[in-house]
Length: 277
Ligand code: PDD
Image (cartoon, rainbow, N blue to C red):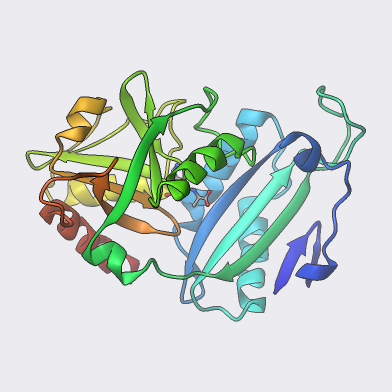
């Protein structure tokens, strides 16, 4: 694969960064994951706006204009033979002697790669996935898409260890999101998802789901759901750029709703697939 690193398109095995990069030493960086369908970066403008918000949140200056980002991203997609891809980009604060204090006059490091986007297993849509719940152990700026993913990784590994595909996170008895996804609960035909604040990532897929619901008269509230309400829900879903919208049918070993992907999810999935075309 060809990757982009600090101004160059090079083979992945030739791409090297300094051990003093603050991304490596401090997890001091932000990132985006952008799905690419048939060579087109999906909802790219929204990803670039969120990138700007993340950079602002950690006080790293955006190294490129949106037009420059778009050119580099499209170039990288083309060099990786178009098709469906998952494009990863990250900006770290750059290379400097280790210090918690920000360095002065250091250029950010920019890295991008694009890998084949594998659709989720068919069974995820016919049967749904298993999820566990766990305490949301992250910091209070989950709205920043930071590369510092140790908490997310620990929580996702708990799911893996339990034979589940996602961990749903509870903070103060309320569902925030998944370890790598936003979460939705359907109760009596009404969709709920946690509001945008510092406790959740403002997912691009989440925004689209909210818009699709509004355009199609599907009731949806941006309101956090309690643990007990979630456990009695008719449906639970997760969403992300790499997984789209996936139903959860087993939560902590208990059947969700009927135990099959629900009707509201079916409807949203059809709308989502249609929008993608
Ligand atoms: N993660 N919440 C968290 C904690 C996430 O990590 C993600 C995505 C989402 C969904 O956001 P979006 O719809 O914009 O992908 C929500 C990406 C895919 C990742 O880290 O690989």
